[in-house]
Length: 140
Ligand SMILES: Nc1c(NC[C@H](O)[C@H](O)[C@H](O)CO)[nH]c(=O)[nH]c1=O
Ligand SMILES: CC(=O)[C@@H](O)COP(=O)(O)O
Image (cartoon, rainbow, N blue to C red; front, side, top):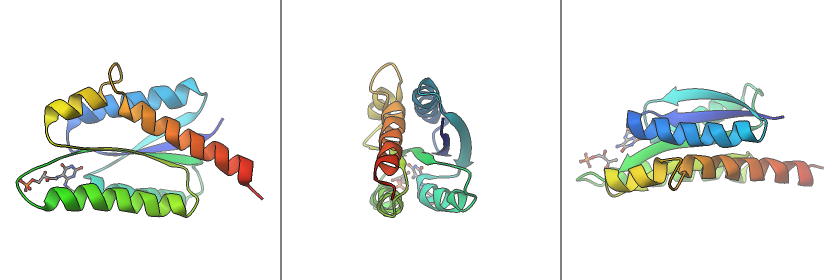
């Protein structure tokens, strides 16, 4: 049993609920403990994971959020920088799954968030679990 923290950017409530449900279901099906921390937007997800890691309470993390393209360059910043921040932490050896959708419209997000369809929340949780397994395998 490991302890996972889901950090969710609560920007689109209905989409987030589906992503978190998928992530939680995958983690609990594998017998892990799950807590959820909510932040305002995807840009806050990497920083929140970094802060939470200082507690030493968690073995792995799942970042959840939805970024939908608007009219300006802001989409590129939020989508790219949230992924970059998560990847930077991952390269430091943390077990993190990136479940932040970066889509053109709500219809694309719905299909991907729905646990009964693409289940991207569950997919991100499985990625975090896979990295945690690797940590165990390669730990010196
Ligand atoms: N436009 C979206 C955002 N934008 C907000 C940022 O993530 C951030 O909270 C703000 O810039 C303050 O630092 N966040 C999303 O999660 N999804 C979006 O579509
Ligand atoms: C992340 C986004 O692109 C979006 O929410 C911001 O919209 P806009 O570019 O129309 O300000």
